[in-house]
Image (cartoon, rainbow, N blue to C red):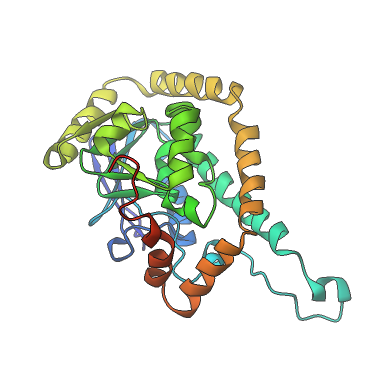
Length: 292
């Protein structure tokens, strides 16, 4: 099995387990992790020896979101700086919003590659599943969470939208989706099951065995049946407007990133620390939950 910097990969009969392996970063999603995850899926795409992929996280979290440790540019394949050239047009450079929109489209394309992987993808969520983590489980086929997992998009308080909205409008419906986005609050695994964000919540100490048992049960089906079942449901979601809806989210997210709140968050993150930026963003919300 090939070696990866951000993933651990193991196989057990027809089930392959892919573990996001940046535990010191709470498995935040970097460009390298994006690339390696696609490479792993491409590796497992041929043949029916592996029929199900289980996706989980190492350490204390499934994934705390996209990697913003070095500022928003860290998720970008292109930098937002004018080129050093004699050509005046390229020397002046592109607008922030144009490059931002292109970078968000790259993320959306990455998520679509995962969604269109032909074999079942089963997500196993413990700890934090936020922002980009929510996007990632949104394109998986089945999702199981620990009862004490923490799911949501606190980044809506200053950084805009998850690229695919985690498919929340389809899963949880418009009312619950707006509640999560308006507040940036999170839900635990039991609430996520009630909201249909995940298939089922189970006690944390039972999660690994439970999900593996489910994966083995799926793998009892032949691959050609599994791929047909997955494709037909995905096409229904496509016909409900998945593609145009993601395009709209990308466009509106680019606009949201023009907010002075986003600029201030990134200024604090780059001049002080990401921890300081998160404290600035989330501090006013502590103790203000409508249910408390």
